[in-house]
Length: 421
Image 1 (cartoon, rainbow, N blue to C red):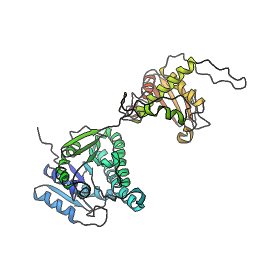
Image 2: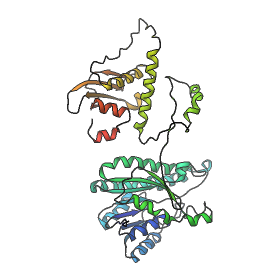
Image 3: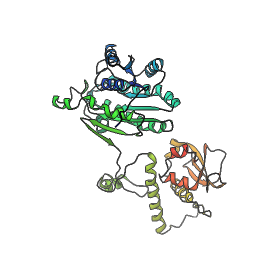
Image 4: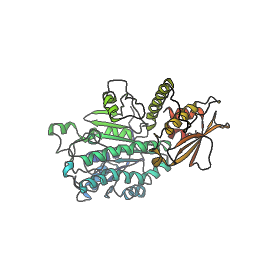
């Protein structure tokens, strides 16, 4: 197998003066990369500063024939760090957000300083460095980013409420950046490493530490930031020679008639939390929409089978639009109309506060067959056939594409990118 090389790639490692960061820097330096070694040189609790840690790693890389420069800025000043890469090498190809500190203490005793310092280094630091590199990567049409999460963020850890929150937040950042960078060949992933370091030395037994040498984390990260990698938006656990990808899992859940009560939830809580039945693995918010429509269809069928109540004389019933065009979207808009006509969508009004018009065609470029207004700005909201000049946004879509988006078969963001509306 040919060696994965990084010749002429510019690689930035934050927190590269010690531990895993140092191993990353030495590795990339040995594989042809031009390495920016960033380290503030402080303690593992976030105090102090020194240039020695970064300088020493740079010296090691250069002594072996590699190319490297040091940067001593805190990660909260990402522009300064990326500026070092641009001034010395003219580009930035890879960012490994590795810098971190610990301020472990039980939540009851945690101070705002304990919380704020962790957020500043882990979450804001990764944001600041990545944002400074982002537009450069977009213009290049190339970029690779790895965010360092933690098992504490994935599973929780006593005494690490601050650290856990920041680390899981980093994966949320990963998920969104992976989508936003997709068109420009920017791949973004997360890792949850298990490795011996000055931060874990006090938490793990000595015997375990030798098997958790930080050098064993390097191969996965090196692959994820290589040009051949196509993985993006993923999170991996790694340590001691074990590598695994994680994903979200959702139970089959339970459906309820609308409205429903806390007592109804109690009655079905075992179904809601049962992972032994047929489960699925959502990867996008739109993956949940089919569940809503499935429930709407279930309710609609149940109501159709029930005896129809006599409508009060002084309260005329809203009439459903009659389908004469055979559009699949008509059924979906009808479900929306029924939902809003009951007042159950009232909570959406202050959150959305917008009016949308959907123009439905049979095929792209063909005349509009029918238009619907979805008013989520006034009163309790409504859905009706027609057009309005007051729309905040107008979408023109084919009947098939609209149905596919609503059923979760077509990602709305991908549909927009593909100019489907």
